Image (cartoon, rainbow, N blue to C red; front, top):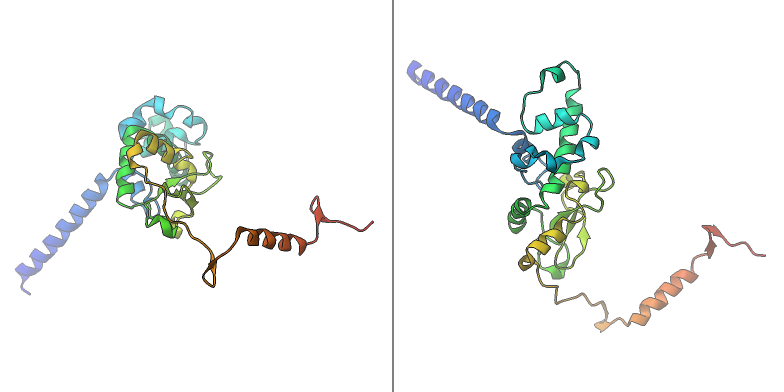
Length: 240
């Protein structure tokens, strides 16, 4: 390789590095956060929604380091008086994640948020129902509690109307409060045309080809109850 070729190669490498650095600097915090592994369920909240203080009513009381967190989410420079107050960067990042999650739960209840989530849902980005007779029905994220830290995100199937644990382990640590308990129901209230029909097939237990009579289950439950010592207030009954 000649000196001219060496120079050309190094010039291309430097150009690629510069392009990569400039492109990474242009990525917003919201885009970065939603692109993290395990955050695939989140949609990107519009910045103008976040900038409207009415939409954030009450969140300052729930999120520590609120002012630092909102500045981080919106990629704003901190105020001069805030720069003099030392706060650990990890604490701010955790606060920003909590704040964005709570904002996200509100945003996906709006028309704009619902539209973004419908697009992700129709592309199967949330996964598919595990129930055989739902025939790979696409599912939606849902929380079992609106209070952060109480329950991780679950997946709601609009066909069988049951909730399931996400299949991927990377979604097992996503807080369900960041999606709320009412999101799927709001979606179908606003867009009833997207509600799938209930499954027509249902699993029928059989033994040697014959359907199992419902009385058999009652007998099994009775046998199971008789096989256990009867208890009262959690302690075995003593003979009098």
